[in-house]
Each structure stands twice: as structure tokens, then as C-alpha cells.
Image (cartoon, rainbow, N blue to C red; front, side, top):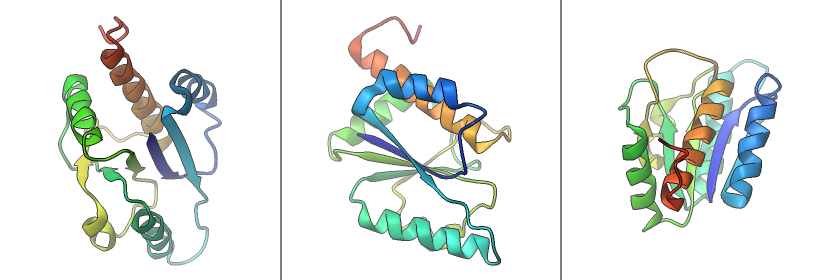
Amino acid sequence: MIKIISFVDSFKHYSEPIKEFQKRLWKEIELVKLKPIKNWNIIEKETDVLLDLLNKEKWFKIVLNPNWKNLTTEEFYDLIEDKKQNYKNIIFVIWWANWIDYKKIKHVIDYELNFWKMIMPHILIILVLIEQIYRIWMIKKGTAYHK
């Protein structure tokens, strides 16, 4: 299973395509919406919430970091397939509007990934990530979807 974690109020702008890919992936994917904190010390409090969650999970943890390396779809497929050999489950953490105290969570992160250098809404990144997960799922099944 793959879990995607993000601090987000809703997916309203992209809810239909997100729901469509969730339906296609069936039980392969879970979206975890963490409620954004709306007071002082946002970065500290949201980092603590995230750290608590990540410490509980024994999964392979990937942070989408805008300053890290890009992969092609095929390289992304290879990464996921390789990690599934040793980990039953994978978690993706989407950086959000308020960012995080990366120094506090770095020790629990296994890999950092970037889709591209352009800045965009994190909800759109969630949609792109789900589509790429679906694409690698189709590669594994040998379908022509990814071509």
C-alpha cells in the first residue's frame, strides 16, 4: 500500500480527478489529510504532528522536497519496485504551504524526491503523484497506459 500525507483542508479544486485515480487504484493508495494548524508556531506544531505520525509508521518514507532530485516515470517505477522488496508499504509526504522544520524530521525520512522545479499548489502535486503511482501500477501490469 502507498499512503500520501499532506496538511490540507480539502481537495475541492482537484477532487474529481483525485477520486478517479483513487477508484482506479482501489486499495493500493490512501490519502491522509492532516488538518492545517491555524495559530502561532505553525511550522513547529505541524512538524511535531508529522513527526509523531512518521515515528509510528514502519514504512519506507519519501518526502517530496522541491530541492531534491527528479526521476523519470521509469526511474520512479524502479524506485517503488525496489523499495517494495523490503517494505510492505510506502509513505509520501507532501510539503505544504507552511513548510516544515526539516531538521526535526530528517532522521525519519528514507528518501527525498522532486517532480519538477516549478512551484505549484500542493494539491496539484498530490494529483500528479497519484497519477504517477497509477502510471507505474499500469507499467507493472504491462498495459499501454504509460506510453
